[in-house]
Image (tube, rainbow, N blue to C red; front, side, top):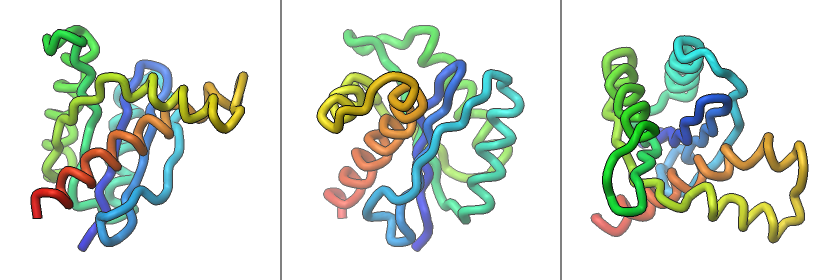
Length: 140
């Protein structure tokens, strides 16, 4: 077994989550505060290697009607680069409403202001990853 990495990619912040070693539950999460695309890629690649990740799941922000917009195209580009740099499988995972759900979770826990801004992307990454892990468990 090996860890799976979940990513919620944004222009200013990137949420990152790792599964536990069994690939069953989300474990560690954090937010990478970086705007430079090359540094984002380097940080993701480094973290994937350090955590001995076997697979990457990248949030794929489709429009509500299922079409792919600018954000989706940016995720496709990132996925292509990560596949080349890590030689790992990278799955684009539909993330519609994930950020809304992350905000709802933070509301329920009364997380506000700067702390919310610093946390919402990590929560979104954990939701993307857990959704994918649940899907994989159901397929078995």
